[in-house]
Length: 93
Image (tube, rainbow, N blue to C red; front, side):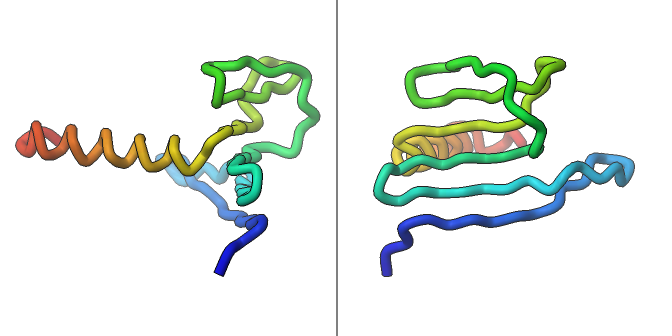
């Protein structure tokens, strides 16, 4: 089964039980784009961290969203790096 787009919502809790806004995730299969919406505030600017990752900011310069292009490759590579680091340093947490 191929998913053309997927939207997921979840609520996060900070240490101490402070509730954050609901975070939304949307994945667009055909474009291979993952978008994380941390807040539904209007976007006032963005910063390109690298050619595939852009962060969205509100009026106060706070992070409200993340867009990841070529998301499947990014996630695969991130997981592989974590696994390799764990294998090379099994005693470290």
